[in-house]
Image (cartoon, rainbow, N blue to C red; front, side, top):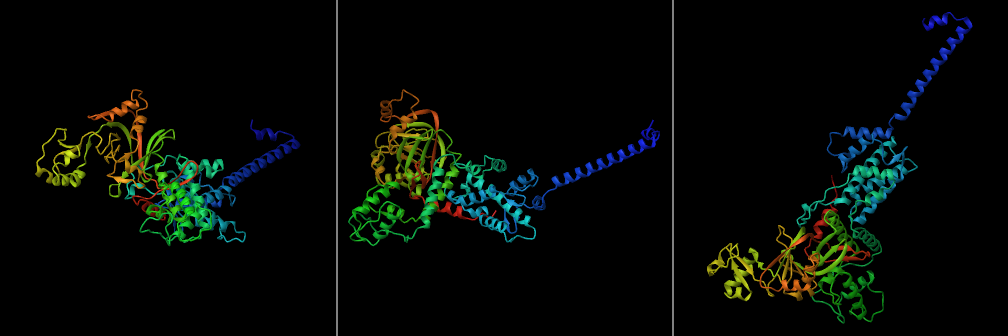
Length: 573
């Protein structure tokens, strides 16, 4: 029997109550449905700001680069992915109000100048204007305030991605520079979308960005040096006219440049202000301060103002900030190279080799590097073998430009230099005088093992396309020179026996006596290394040591300016 028929059989009073109940239930169900629809609409309707972000990104879907007005954004693809994955929800504001994370990122953008970067590459000025407009209680916003919030959200996110990339791999691509940097090009190892989402979740932008710094400690120390230089720059009242000297100045000399140079030593804290009898005289007090300055800047502390010292003292705080910026960029390029626990580092600009084991320096040695027109290249390769009592296989270019002319002038030249001419397989050749005028010379010239050999008593090989290696030298006195850019490109080391002992330390049969014997025999001996330790030849004219002390070196190959120009070139895309 149907429910309606059942009701019709009921007494009229009961039937009325049942019908009333049915109406109440129906109304209640209707109210629930309406409330559910309202609830769903209220909590699932996208905000005006979210819709604005979605509309902008979807309308610009066919454009290769996003822009805000005329301003190009740098990370268009990352922006599309980031906002699509969050259903176009804003990242830097809530309910129309800016979050603390937005303020923190704005601060970190300004702080990027201590990384040697330009905050304007990350929309710093435009972001500041938008912050001011949105925060202005008088309301300088457009008729739709979410338009400004959308501008700001996109710019902040784009700035984060751009800064993250520059911190991890550098702004400048070293492969585009004329000055060689054959250490490979870093590629991002981190998903910046994930990094930003994680930073937002943790509530810390600073922590996320700092995770991208190069792993070695000197990077953070370098940031502090640039910060200190910036404070110096703000109080700098000196005139930094270039001082060039016709001859070196020593204590007791009188010169018109002395007052300015003294002021610079006082400015940098190497001299305290003091009374002097004659401002033009280079006195004893000034000499003491100068020696300390020279020690701190890798010069021979001889108390004499030569060209190298004068060149260094010509640098103002602003100049030094530029030099530091260039080298902070180089450190970012190095980040993938210096991950091994055991490394041989050669800083060409510092004329120094450091053998590192788990970041501890176990050997430091002076080196001689390539002269200006035979620059030592920047590259990395594993050390594979040692040649004791080596032959020097003279490069064809040196044979043509130096050996052949010398032999034509003096037929006894080869015998005097302990040299011989051989075939490519090492067989001796009797060369006719006319052969020395042949171009190219058809044979190989090599110098026999011995104390007069230009490679000294040992060479250390890390095969590479540059034909560069580390070797001993008979000209030991050259290590006492301040400027040691003297070779044809290879690296001459001051302490070859100690270096060999370190490379062979895992083989107890290689005692110091055995090494000495191997270095003084008549035949070349090749020793293959069990462990192939990376050799990194690089070029740094600034770094900060573990104590935070700054070290600046002369730009012997004039490479800094090209990097600086590229760093300062405003990013347009």
